Amino acid sequence: MLDVKDLVVCFRSKEGIHEVVHGISFSMEDGEILGLVGESGSGKTQTVLAIAGLSPINAVIGGTITLNGQELSLLSRHEMRTVQGRDISMVFQEPMTSLNPTMRIGRQVEEALRIHTKLSPEERKAKALQTLADVELPNPEAVYNKYPHELSGGQRQRVMIAAAIICDPKLLIADEPTTALDVTIQAQILKLLKKLNKTMHMSILFISHDLGIIRRLCDNVMVLKSGDIVERGSVDQIFNNPTEEYTKRLIAAIPSRKRGITTDEHRSYYEYFGFLEYDDSDDELEGPF
Image (cartoon, rainbow, N blue to C red; front, side, top):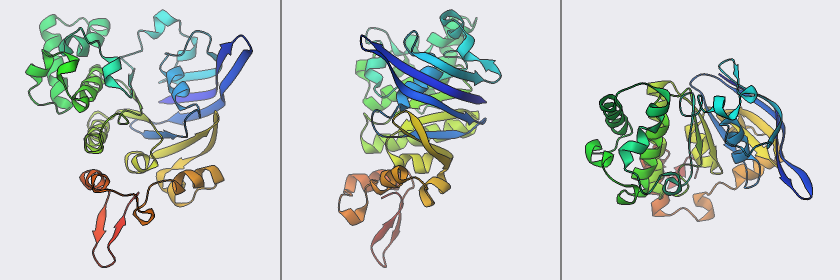
């Protein structure tokens, strides 16, 4: 479904060209959830911005990006707009900065329909209301007519997901979409993404620095360090038998109850998402914590 080969992304400054992604290659299958992990500055966001066609002009200086047989790296900015929102959509970390504060929710959710379809205003509204319901927002009609500031952070993130999936994209890119949310709302958003993956057979490229989330959400994992892929494999393989020292250090950094930093709020979050199983015999918690 997605094939990335020898991708090179750079920043340009007065001092010259600085590569931030060094010729990485990977692929995704239909319906796959691929986790992209690494510390800050590892190149995660620059990789997905390049795939989504949102990198600055001349930032991508090498490699190819192919989606369902169409080589995106050959498309002009104008041609890429026919793909964005229809075949590839993206959900960002902070929905309040992604939504227009002066525009009602309904119009923003419908934007991709206005660009990519010839639906009438009535048909667009009906589709928007259905999609708001699909992302489990209560009372979609009321939400449709509200402004972003009238919604909670979790509701705004659901709105962003609704806007991203309204055209049934083949690939949804989620760039740390739960970081700005409290842990209980994080769990709800992750369950929603898992449901959309199953019901819509939509591939998801999920970016996070939280390996606990990656472990439970994703099928496969790719670990980035300083712009290079240092390890990749299935979730079971990476978490149970990592080969690279960097990956081992990332896994070792996952919070554990034994280290005394699991709070009641954390337990509530992981119980909600079905991560934890209690064993009263030794009072141990099994799972990413």
